[in-house]
Image (tube, rainbow, N blue to C red; front, side, top):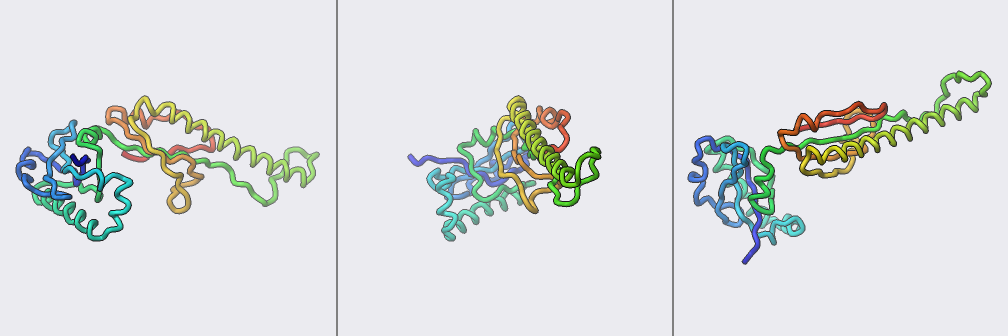
Length: 232
């Protein structure tokens, strides 16, 4: 028997509870019949899904088919067909092409969960080559004052990165009490990095709605370290 996984097309509102009947017989990807999965916390919000062969849609298997334009067109047309059918009946939030889950139960596990992004920035003073500020010690020569200034800058940067590392550990230690999952992303650089400072941590957490405010609560941060929480 061919192993199957769950292909998700869209999130939709089923206020009257008639969508299942309206979609009866609608073929989805791989001509599999479409059915609805209730999200749990709200009975009027559903996800349209259908079973698809695991061998074709698991992450490793998807890389090759996505380069097969005929296969890709077939999947895209079926995906759009389901979304169009839903849109003709109700409010729809389409999902991306080839959004898959191991099974319907894994999909419903996302009910009443929100995703929060957590970015940690180091705002350490940049090293400068310019003249040092006048030293408070009159016995220091200009050369020694410059070296002292550069040494103080280096120590400030080291302290800021050390503080950021400690903050990251504090977040990691506290997160399991309120979050059910976590994904690490590559720190953002260049145009992707917003605001001042260097992005050193870029994580995403899945948090139950009941714990959302607790997750956002943050203790005081040391100088030179900034946390940006985005979402849900």
